[in-house]
Length: 100
Image (cartoon, rainbow, N blue to C red; front, side):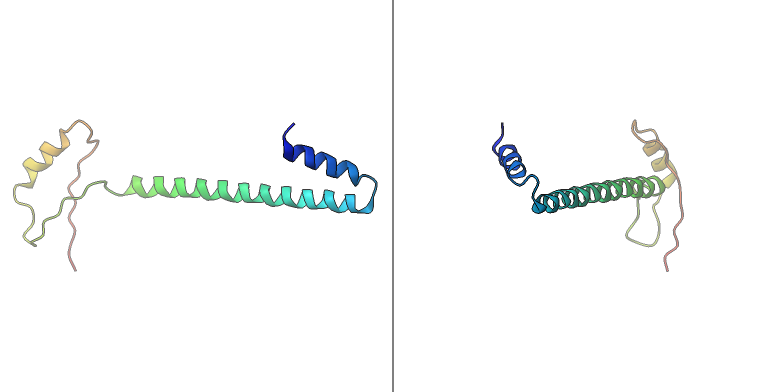
């Protein structure tokens, strides 16, 4: 028998029938309720994080090609065709962004 379990059983048997045993039971239930609520809160937070991450990554591009100068990328059509033929590329889109 593990030492912690032995001490818990010995303590609960020594106080059996005394008024303090009710306090021990309420304390154990309080700790169990606190741990359970912490587990539920962490599970909800983890699910929210995964859902948010999936939504954000699903709606934005993983790679964006931009040119430093404002004259744009020259010969972008052959570049777009070359990139779209790569084995792991699912989609290649042309999108214009205006600079403010």
